[in-house]
Image (cartoon, rainbow, N blue to C red; front, side, top):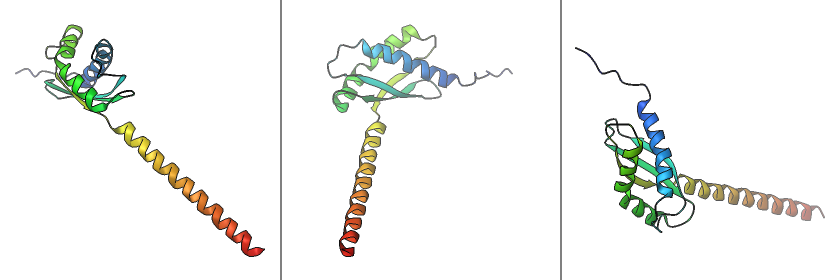
Amino acid sequence: MRHKRSIPNRSHRIADQIQRDLAELIRELKDPRIGMVTISNVDVTPDYAHAKVSFSVLVGSPDECEAGLNEAAGYLRNGLFKRLQIHTVPTLHFHFDRTTERAAELNALINRAVADKAKDADEGHAADEGSKA
């Protein structure tokens, strides 16, 4: 009995190729809801039937963009089918990646905390100076 040998990291290579090809295909879309999109990650199921595509948006509404991309998923899948040399091209599922949004919020909170601490330290230092006088 012969076993089908799996190719190491094949799913990672396919996900990377899908990410590169989708970036090019999305630029060609004419949908006004889809702004400047960056594909941040592609997760492909082991059977290559589905791919979860995470994206971020520089300009435009993330919800509208997600709707536009999911409506164009069939067209994009067809474009991938013409480019990829694999038997099964996965069904695409687009999800807005909130990582950069969360990072910006955390950064703002940290900056605010640092500024508040510096202000408290300055006020404390001024009070110490005032009591010495």
